[in-house]
Length: 237
Image (cartoon, rainbow, N blue to C red; front, side):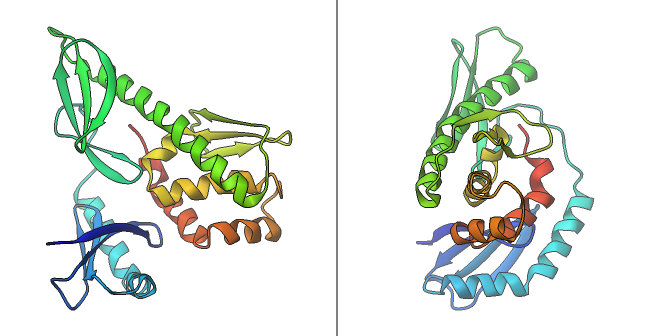
């Protein structure tokens, strides 16, 4: 189709935007809980956001209806299941062989378990969690360095933890902690969480000055915040 894909945020959902020169009008679809928008290749980003804004009510109705019809199915940790990283879907592939770290190759998450193993779901889940945590260290450190420069702040330390009910924290000493599960979310949401905690080095409360500082780096922070409120509980391995 010679298409270009990107992800944009709506109010409480993310949408995959597919740009193609094969069509002249835009279409919005909600299938199995995923929102896709197919638009002409040259349509401006502002026009795409306007379209999604106008369809927000309809999209959320469809998403709610589909969630009711398709109850959450517990993960079985078998080949073919989908897992997300930075908002993109990757298929799990369980292989037999000497145990080694999980790898992301060719759009698949490869987990290798020893020959003769019963492929314990707990063991596979543990291997996946270790991979996500290792990626979180790299990705969150990278983003923290970038936004620290933009905000002109210097955190005392940056760490990755397994919080149960929060996505990050910032102490009065400037020690920042991020929840590793945030790297399951779309890239823009990760940016929001990283910048959010770093802004607390400027303003430790959530007053107007804090949101103003955050808005300069993350103009769509309200959409990001709404997305996390709706989807945060689903960010799990």
